Length: 79
Image (tube, rainbow, N blue to C red; front, top):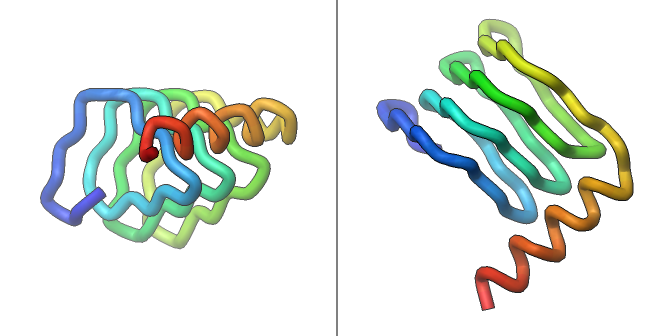
């Protein structure tokens, strides 16, 4: 998600890096929030990186089985 982006939707993918703003759920095998990121919603992932300055308000679900299901769904959508 680009630095000046303002996403009002759910985001899924194998790896998601947020530089801008997301209001919605994020599901991925790896989620990274950079110092400029602002996220409100549920993040489902077995691996999360929150850099200093990132803002997160929501629920973090690190259930590994859910993360794998989210990645499979994202890969199928990409094909």
